[in-house]
Amino acid sequence: MRKKPAIVVGLLAAAALATTVPATAAPAAHAPRAQCPQLDKSLTWFGDNRAKLQKMIDERGTCSGPKGGARPVAAFDWDNTVVKNDITDATLAWSLRHDKILRPKSWKATSAWLTPAADKALTKACGTSVPVGKPLPTSKNAACADEIMEIREKERTMSGEPAFAGEWNHRRTVPAYAWIPQLFAGRTPATVTSFAKKARAEQLAAPVGAKQKVGTHTLAGYVRYYDQQKDLIRTLKKAGFDVYIVSASSEPIAEAWSSGVGLDRKHTIGIRSILDHGRMTTGIQGCGGVQDGPGGSLPYMDGKRCWINQEIFKIKGAKAWQQQDFAHRIALGAGDADTDVTFVNDATGAHLAINRNKPELMCRGYDNADGRWVVNPMFIEPMPRKSGTYPCATAGATDPDGGHSPVRRADGSVIPDQVDRAY
Image 1 (cartoon, rainbow, N blue to C red):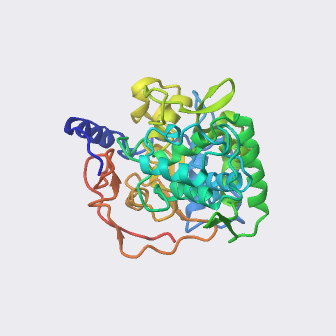
Image 2 (spheres, rainbow, N blue to C red; image 1 turned 60 degrees about the vertical axis):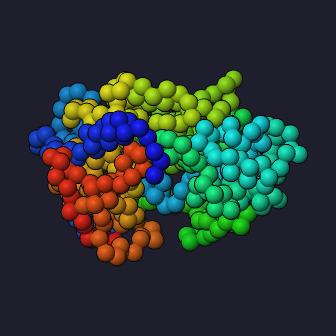
Image 3 (cartoon, helix red, strand yellow; image 1 turned 90 degrees about the vertical axis):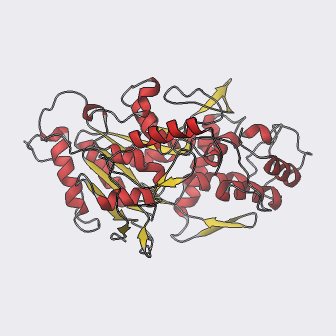
């Protein structure tokens, strides 16, 4: 565990507790006055999940009659929530296979948290013969591609040394996520989107279950939109919801995919790089009063709440990190991992959790404190049932310093360990 001064750890832990409590019961809904758009009954959902989601649409959609004020908001994570597999991995793999990563002046300069060991390993593997700012021949140099993929996947070098070190809030960022847009420094956002679109075409054409090889790494070689999620987003929009994607992918990458579910750039929130004369830099925009810099406040875990509050509800400064009143919270939140737990938990109408056996999200989903959690297996190649129980009562929650602690309800009580029930 990385060390911090005791007072900092204490303050961060207190803030995490204050900002991750579950929503209380939603306000009384207006009785439906008209038939709201219906979810497609031919698409399979687990148990009565379709009925639960339809009930929320009927209650909260503008189709139910005049409610006044702003439209209800729905927010979705992207990878393994709206699609099967990871679009960042797909784009990085395509870029490495097509020599699209530009050689940085210094690998250490790509991330404030990159270790000397990682800097040394990348410099050795990728070499120094390519001029700075020119494409690295990663399609032929397997050692260079391997070091990049290993750091992306496992946060370590090929020799097993840690790739990132230092201090960061583990509920607001992860250096390996920030590192992907930092690798594309020197490219324009439009160019990165074009890479992602080419990867998208390749991944959608590949059969379900396909694999690809980058260097000596083998990873998923296909991506699929979930039909159920496409239908849910379409139905929400018809029912008057304002629907957003909030992803820890680089925003130009997410934009290449979100149009596939009818969402535009305005409704796609991802990691936002700082531009210099129209080109991406290693700097990343901050949220909630956190200054622009190395990426200390990504749309990740508590950071997703911050970006939703800041960009959708226009709440500025430190207040954006706090859970808001019902009028300034999303009606539906959908995610698949602990990286999504805070904003999904903030939803006042329905919390849709796609089960990938991630403890903090599943602890809240199965505890179902407000009766509005909807837990569903992945729609393609679902995970097997988790053996044993989720360690909710002891180590289900991630702390700001990277440690783990019990998952707590709004009243401070500890959620007991939970058994996997939707698989």
